[in-house]
Length: 378
Image 1 (cartoon, rainbow, N blue to C red):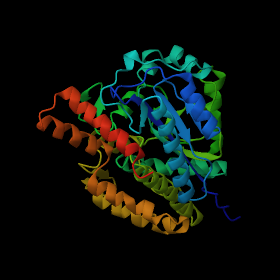
Image 2: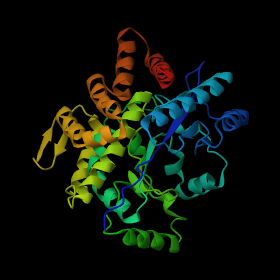
Image 3: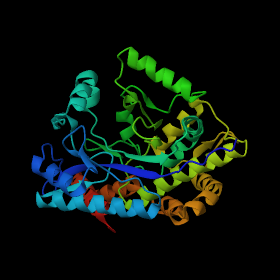
Image 4: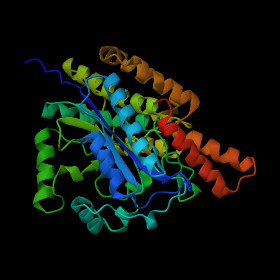
């Protein structure tokens, strides 16, 4: 029997940090009216996050990258407009350059109250934001099969999104410090490998019966089968400061899913490497971004990211053309040539220091950059 082609619909969720324009510091307790105004204008596409200094938006189910672009543009602009009325601004960055988690307040919501009670300081430190990309794959078995294979490419996506080089006023030396914070939670990191959907469901059921979690929404892997939708949800990426970079990552993940589906349709599959090996690339992506290359496990050597990127673009070219998103996929070359948000943040900080600014003022210059880039081109 022929394998039914998934819809490969697309949905993108982004989390932003809210900052005061005057101080550039985090808004630890925004007025309830701000969220209420956003909810009234965005009709179910916006919600508070775990910390009150965060806000999350999500696109509708999109068939094309053009729809996703239009929706994300509207979401970013609306949040920025509403925040601006209060003297605030959203920044699409996975950590704040100098904000401190100790003074943040978590949202009074049952799910978040339980999270804070169960995880304690590990949850309270979650002053991080990410981007999640959902791709529609309606068949349970195919969703698990692609989950197993696509994990190989997750570090390659992370390096294109890095936006968290700072933590509490310190240059961490990492391009994505966010994952270091998030990794403190249980059930994070690369996904488990499952031989079938049945095995996946039985594993989740054991956890639920034991009272360890309410449902599969508490699995926080870098990619997971969504517990709410018939989608595969990619979660490894930092939130991208520039909208074009976000759409590039979303397009690449969607195309990789379809490429792996095509392989299965032709009775082929991507080679599955051990989690131990892929984890090494994950660490290199966290630490260096794309600056020092990733390991090509077939060759057994570190390869410059530019070479790996060209291979990926060729792998998914047919799929990018099928979806009409070749421009978004090839935008990865622009990201590689000019750097991610993390590169620009670090460059802004160093330039300010060289021009005589004190570290505190240099960090504020980074926030100014993030405010401007979050809404630039909208």
